[in-house]
Length: 183
Image (cartoon, rainbow, N blue to C red; front, side, top):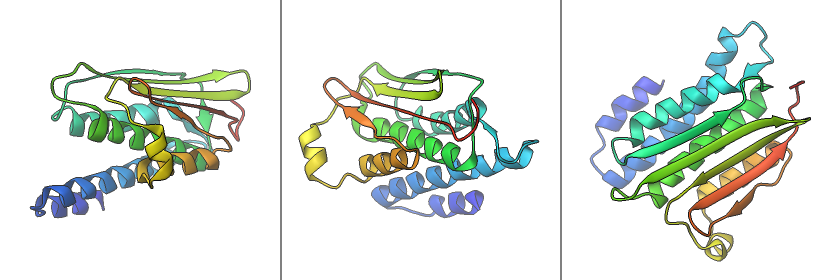
């Protein structure tokens, strides 16, 4: 299915529509990766998060490193496992954050940095993401309908948590949640 969408993408001439279509393909790819991991897993209810996230980031690097030089500093505990729903929500959050950093925060001239940390601390999975981009006004975000931020907040709610988002220099988001599985 993704191959068919990529073929259609090549036929689009409008740059804005092409970018929107590419973002949709990225979301579909993120969801497809969860299903692929499940099919290859011995336990259909348990997904190793580290490898899944590395695969998503590798896919996104291919797309975005052609636009900007980006230093991605990724630190994900290898022992974290989650069920399909949680893994899919987390993957979509990461996809959305990296996409937003590239779409709105980074410039060709800057030293663009993304930090992603996912740690197992006691019985919680702790998530932190930041970029050193241009940032944004939180009041504007709260007053307008920003699809990416709204999606991130809703996905965090699906994980049973609230995302804390700040933007003074760059953007920072953090949240913690319990895995439905033993971590």
